[in-house]
Length: 113
Length: 116
View 1 (cartoon, chains in turn green, brown):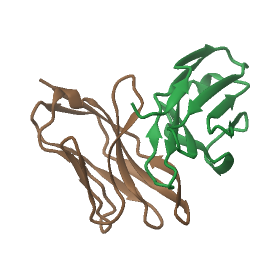
View 2: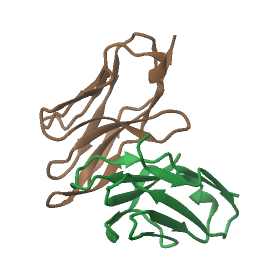
View 3: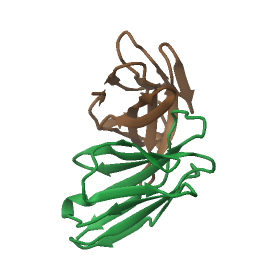
View 4: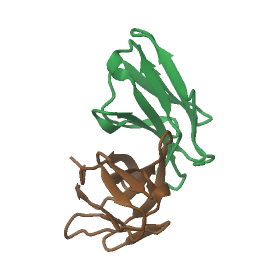
């Protein structure tokens, strides 16, 4: 158990809908990262937050957004969903000292029908 | 930009065989290097890491050495077990500036299957 929690574990929804994925980092970790894992693209970095502020952006679509709250949990919002958004979404966190090891949650599997 | 290339799989071995999964990288600066493992239906677990040239990371019988001259970080294990069957990802960290770190860049993953 990495200490990173993600909810829900599975999500099934329809095209055009909006969903919110939630992540709680390890206790004390200030950085949260979101990744998407799909068969065709592999593991792709989406976005990073550090202590509530956006730190870096990767291959994140404009239909996707994220935020990190004062209690350090993070949410990834996916809107106007398309079939191609079906994937595993992982959250990771890294420690307070700015260390480079990222600890991953179990992931949320999103299926868009 | 940064990139990681892993040997293509899948890799199929018999129990107690020697394992090597090749990983090479392209990066600016001095990234840290990682191997993560993903068991079926689970998230990614850190297997081992190395933060500078010639460092050797090791865990659970797995080893990898950070070779700056060949830009490689090959994963090895002397004797694999059925329980090692999983997907293995090589990754590097992107130094975001100063002492803080940013995203991980992953290789495409290598599926390992170990038969009894």
